[in-house]
Image 1 (cartoon, rainbow over the protein chains, first blue to last red):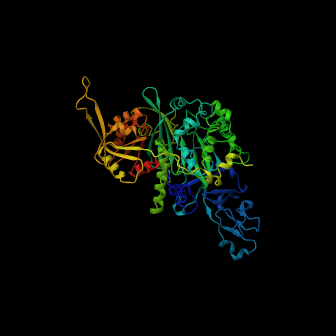
Image 2: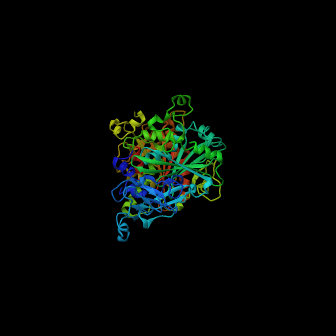
Image 3: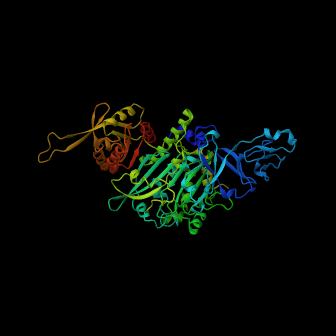
Length: 428
Length: 172
């Protein structure tokens, strides 16, 4: 349970809000590289942290993220012409470069210098790992580029997708660190999904439905360990890293690629659920990529031409009561991503946490909220850089392993939890 | 036409969600396992709580006069802030959850007795390990080792403010 003011504090991320200021300390995924595939390609509307922006790749390949609306009379620059190193408003021809600087006001003599006095708000963009990232904070505090492993391996070893999720970012993100729901909601997928099936560890998931949890703070966020009984006086551990404010890693299965998420606020009622898959030491196979594109694993099928899930609230998520009754899926919804999203969206645009009844196994969620509140307050009151900004905090890796029962996971899995170039993941 | 899922998830429909309370008050026993954590429990107990009961130590006694032919039975007692000794089994029975707290590196093996009582009544036991200023990783390992076999959830929490946050979240 949270008090209403705490819930508001955590869920509001617009300009000037404490959590909005926190998010603006980090590089955030904003577009897939495929959305701006080449110089002078069509611009793309972006809404992030309750700000409406337009992204484009100019003639020289430079990326820009600027205020969506023309500084002249306010039409959307989405209608603009992306040409000759700038985005030109089709209304009266005003033109802006990737920094938001106005470079042409056709109705005024070029020599007047009028254009130089017009500048739209802009944010830097960088491209890494097939993802375009933005930083929306104080330019003087811009951190180094993100070093999460999924965006640091060669491009043929990584795959990212995104889907619109129509609810506040926090309830979506909390699903990513709520390890206790997996044994219920996703139980039908472990032996069927091509990106999960066949792993030796699956038998422990399905054989012990009452995992025991351990939550420890890490430099950048949390480590949430879920242990299940295994043979030979061992525990099967699945360890989920959460890096503040919104990155999670799902513990791996066998040699399948590792996957996880970013949960990026669009506004207070919508977010982008980013999903990644990567392998630290090998290229993804054609069949793996085909499965990801087909919406398997943590990815989803789309409404063609969009990043809106094919199963969505307008069609009741394609609920299949027969599959639910037969136990093919636990909730009747197909696919892990939409199993989560359907329930999280049903909580309402912003979940009312004053009414929830948490139990002991929800401590991962309780601790995450606590760390977010603490960090946002420290930033607001003392200017303290929050955890997760330091790229060293981002070099974590999810792990699944068997350990003797008397071995602490933070010791036994210490090396497994560090992302190391060229070193295979630790997985069962 | 809107689907029912689309309609019900709208901001407008939030107005129609039932506002009545959806739970009854619950009782949570918060038990310090050592002297250092007793001071923490004492401090937390001064906040306003609805259903949290705080105990600063655990003690044991044996029956003075066992029934004929029976050996002496061990009894465990929880000592509350008012100085009363309350029967462990009875306190666990009437609790919804049991939270045990230990300062990292202290002897927390008494948790096994509390865990037995929890098992008797199918109550969840939550373990909190609180590192001190001079705590080493080894100290934390020792505490985790004591609590792990018995806890449904184990948390290493830096700072006692987390205990308050957790108890509030659990509606204690």
